[in-house]
Structure formats: C-alpha cells, structure tokens
Amino acid sequence: MYMKRYYFDYAAATPLDSSAEKAMRPYGSGIFGNPGSLHSFGQEASAAVFEARDTIAKSLGCHYSEIIFTGSATEANNLALRGVVKAAMKGGIKNPKIITSQTEHDSVLGTCRDLEGEGVEVIYLPVNADGIVDLKKLEAELNDRTVLVSIMLANNEIGVIQSISKVSEIIRNFREAQRQKSLGGQAKVKGLEVIYPLFHTDAVQGFNYLNCKAEELGADLLTLSAQKIYGPKGIGLLYARQNNESGIKNNGKQNSIIPNSKYLIHPIITGGGQERGFRSGTENVSGIIGFAKAVEVTDKLREKENKRLSVLQKYFLAKLKKVLPQAKLNGGEKNRLPNNINIYVPPKPGEKATAQDLVINLDLAGFAVSPGSACSARTCSPSHVLKALGHNDIRATSSIRITFGRQTDKQAVNNLLKAISKLK
Ligand code: PLP
Image (cartoon, rainbow, N blue to C red):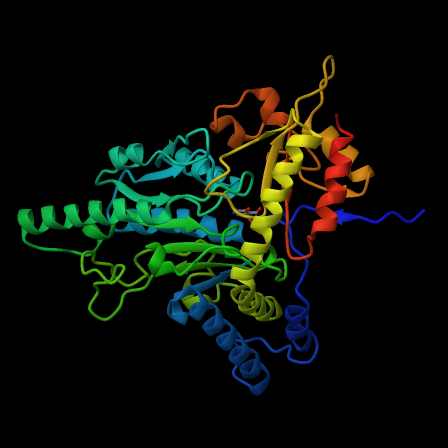
C-alpha cells in the first residue's frame, strides 16, 4: 500500500531546486566543452563558469577571484586547514597551531587529527551546555604560532549559531597587537608575520538562513556546499580572502595586513592549474551553474524562510512538550537555526533504545529524520557534539535530529508530532 513519506532531514541533503535543475540542463550534452579549451566550445563553458562565479561572489560580498570551487564542502574544509598549514610552513612557521572547537563537523575534526599526526598543534575549544564556544579560552590560546582559527557558523547537529563577529573581533585585535609588536621591534612588517591567525568559518549549514557576507563576518576563509542549499551534489567552494591593492583590508578597518591570497593557502590538489592553481581538475561546469542558481534563489528566500520556519520550530517545540513530555531539547533554544530541532528521547524503562531504533521506527511510519551526524547508516556511536555539551553516552546515542526545509509545512509537522507521540 502506498504510504505518504515526509522528509525531515534537510541538514543532510536538500532537494535540487527546480530553477537550478533547469539552469544546469544545457551543460550536459549541449554546452559540454572543457572550460580550459581555447576553442569556442570551451569558451562558452568558461564564460558560463565565470558568470556563475561572479553571481556567488556578489552574494558573499567578495571578488570573483576569491572563490575556489571544490568537489565538496569536505574538500573545501581540507583545503582551508591543510592549505593554510602548508603555506605557513613554507613561509617559515615551524610549529603551526590551529584552534578549532569540539563541535565542528568531522571534515574539520578529522583533518585536524590528521594534521596533529604531522606535528601541528591543535586546540579543540570546549563549548557550554547550549553549544556556544568558549571565547575566553580562544583568547587565551592565541599565540604567535597560531596560523588558523576554524569555528563553524552554525552546527550541523544542533543548529547552534556561533558569535562569529565576536570570534573575528578577537582575532583582529590579536593580529593588531602582533602588528604593533613587530612594528616596534624590528621596524618592519613582512606580511606573513602579521596575517596570522587567519579565520576560517564553515558556513555550510548557515547559508540558508544567515548573513554570509565574508567581510561582514570577518572571515578570511569560508566554506559552502551546494547540496545543502537546494543545489546539486558534488560541488562546494572555499572563499579565500585576497589582497586588495593597498594590502590593507579587514572589515573596512585598516588594522591588518593581508598579502596576496596565494600566501594564505597552498593547493592540496595539484595538476592542470585550474581555479588559479588552488584546485586543479576540470571544473564541474553544470554543478557550478546549479550552485550559482541555488545561491540566487536562497538569497531571495532567506528572510521569508527564516521567519516561516522559526514559527514552525516554536510550534513544534510547544506541542512536543505535550505529546512527548520526557523529550529534551539538545542545545540552547536561542541562537539556533530556525530549521533545527535535536531532541533526546529517553529509552523506556528496561529498554536500551538508540537513535538508530528511533530513526527506523519513524521511517517505518513514513518520517525521515536523522540520528545526528555521529550516526550513519553504517555505524552508530555517541555524538561528539552532544558529548561536548556535557551529555552522557545514553543521551548522546538516543537523540534525533529533525530538520525542516522549504517543503515543510504545518500539516507535515503535525503528522510528525503524531508519529512522535507514539514513541511514548
Ligand atoms: N560542514 C558541515 C557543517 C556539514 O554539515 C557538512 C555536511 O553535512 C559538511 C561540512 C560536509 O559537506 P559534504 O558532505 O558536502 O562534503
């Protein structure tokens, strides 16, 4: 018998927007040239990539040459972290240090752990019970070996939004102090000594709902993924701040010297020199076109969707208290993406329920939710994010993530609440 299915996992993947799909269509068999080719077939593909890059740059408030397309957000995060470390080491910094948080996505944490194996010092900042990063610790950990701070804009499991402007202010102040020191000491400023620490933010989950203008955030590097914003899979990007003519640029304040972005990062994939040498490999033309269209549509819908989903989120949480009073919200209610609800569903007495069981039961009833990113279809271990909030293993394995999106309406939410009430 046909069963209506409801999707509540927009933080994992979003359906391709119809206008993005339409924009991509000609780039399959019609306009198929390699953008690197000199002939007209290549040049029409190259022109389309240029236009798409410019569209995205305008959305991020940056120059088109500051966008590096990658195969995924995972790759963009790798490029940010590994690329900065490589450039710093080539610039003479022997024992680089990275500061990140305990609740970052695995693509940042896994890369950090790997870099630790290569001698990089990594500090994983703690968070409070709401999931907010400890900024006092950040300030205390900055030193002249710190080449990068990587703090995400919004968390993929609990939707907590970090105070990115406060993070960038701390970094800006530290850089300025370093600059004053080097001016006073050696009376010379040689770029690399004062550009660090750079600031990277993973804005993958934030872009649908938050301002992601790189300069306003004070980010030197910023990661996005098309597949989380109703664009195609297999395409991500890294924004990498570039020098302006004077070499002085930071939030409009003349207090930080940033040399040409070739110094900010070093490529991790080498070859034909695409993406100005920062990421070799033939461009994913249709993916880039779809990405740009998805960005355009998201820019138009952001405010409206933010308001609409905030109302639905409040409604859901109020109703949840009645239908499943034992459920507990993970992460603070404030400073949270409007589409994210992450709840602990305590196991029934005598039972050892896990998020996997909850997800399977809801799936059988037609509702797709997620056990959180620590659980995949293959493995299930306590969520590192929920553990960082201070929760025990039971709570960190028996929580589910519900994420709303453009197709979520009140009726779908009511139906989900009905299904959840049966978990009692
Ligand atoms: N960063 C965040 C915050 C994410 O949520 C994800 C995916 O869930 C990624 C990075 C990695 O994205 P992708 O799987 O597209 O590489």
